Image (cartoon, rainbow, N blue to C red; front, top):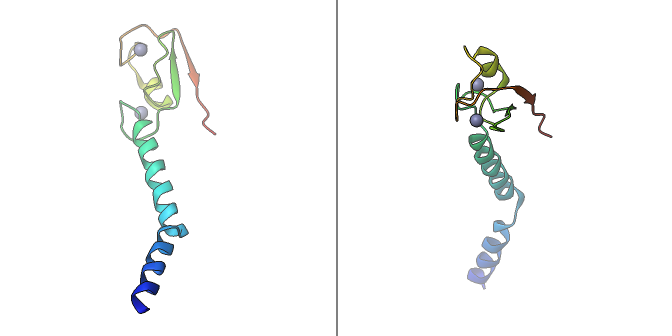
Length: 86
Ligand SMILES: [Zn+2]
Ligand SMILES: [Zn+2]
């Protein structure tokens, strides 16, 4: 009887919120890694370079670029759009 109770307790623990929160945090970290600026690796990239359309750097690095060429494909940057993630 004691053993059976423990099993139920274990199964119940799988669905408690701390686990879910940890999973959500891992998911968020993964997204943040994917969304990191390729230049400074420090901030999330938050601007899109046009016309090539690459979203690869943060606005700080874009402004610091010596020449306005895309760091990914070297295409000339005609315009830049800030991204505002929600
Ligand atoms: Zn940057
Ligand atoms: Zn590009």
